[in-house]
Length: 143
Image 1 (tube, rainbow, N blue to C red):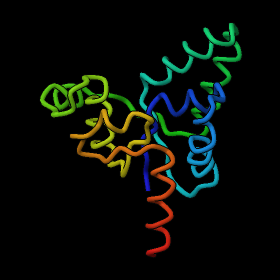
Image 2 (image 1 turned 90 degrees about the vertical axis):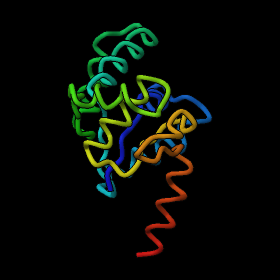
Image 3 (image 1 turned 60 degrees about the vertical axis):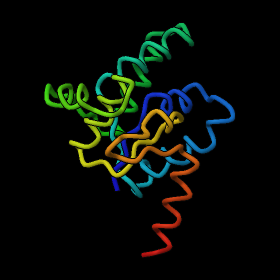
Image 4 (image 1 turned 180 degrees about the horizontal axis):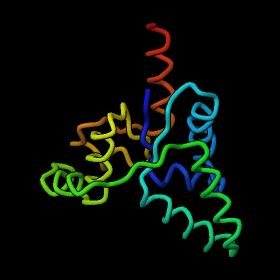
């Protein structure tokens, strides 16, 4: 199973945001443990760097966080076709439409985000980390 991590999930983990850390961290641990494959968009990497650097006021720490992410998650690009697909997408927010298009091209099974409602019309289902864990447990029990 392959999941696309929205930036907000990664920031929850790195910034230890409560109450989100528990479920976001559990999903990320599934990637670390080899239970699922995790992907992240290239634009998220620069966003993560910026947010961590600004929050912690430490560019070396921010860069270290980015490099650690790249050891765990597969970095995926956004193609020109993803942009064109996003412009015709029923997903109303353009950034989310690009994520939906990219995750579809990458054959992700789910987008993990705290803003699942923003992806209502996405071709790839979007779930909160907590809902994903519930769904995964159901699918795992069915096999």
